[in-house]
Image (cartoon, rainbow, N blue to C red; front, side, top):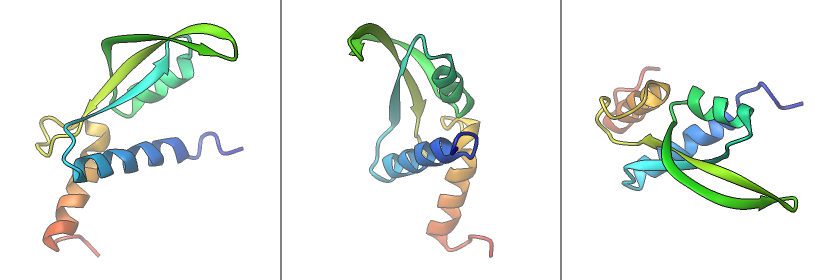
Length: 100
């Protein structure tokens, strides 16, 4: 019943904000290559596929996961559009210029 309510996107955005605050430059998200819904979700919030692959076993069945990556740099040229608003808001809050 929570599908379509942006819960996952909010959690991932919060994780990205936390990662930026910790000085991380990128965040990885492992997605089952057969899970079209998860691949579409990752892509919709700015993650891009990498060459990274790993074999996993899910419910006793072998599967392959692909690593998706999103840069977390403070430079908006490095930050995907899906997260730029978060970066701008974070910067405004840290300088005291956040709109009321």
